Amino acid sequence: MTPSVPKNGERAWTMGGGYTGDVTPSEAWEILEKETDALLVDVRTAAEWQFVGVPVLDGLGKEAILVEWIKFPGGAPNGDFVAQVKSAIPDGTDPAILFLCRSGQRSMGAAAALTQAGFSRCYNILDGFEGNKDADGHRGKTGGWKVAGLPWAQG
Image (tube, rainbow, N blue to C red):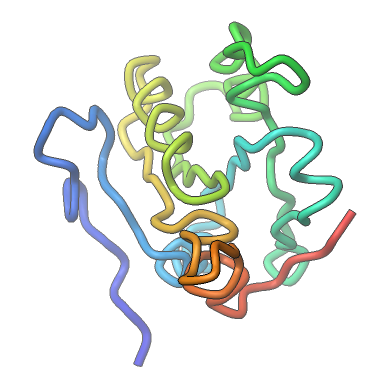
């Protein structure tokens, strides 16, 4: 059974998250599949993209937009983040924008930043690309894009 596409505000954080809401990786895939203008923005670092992997959207005729929320190396916020994401969005459009990070934390801030920039359908992808740590302290086994069986490739 396929989950329904979330409606505006569904599962939104109630403590001032500042964005539309949260979706599971499978729900994010469904939005990307159903909405031709929907975008996936991976906000992890260049090192994460290279060494951990990236979502693959070829089957949908799309590519993930890769824009660091936090710069690598150094860990400084990317002051150009909003402008870099906006440059990938056709002028005058307000698509669903799905934000992905390692575990679903940085992507919340990214979704809020684009919401503040005037986009009305910004979603955080719960559990991110790798999910939370398991009992042994390892990621990639308990949740996230990879565990959901969604397409990805390692750099």
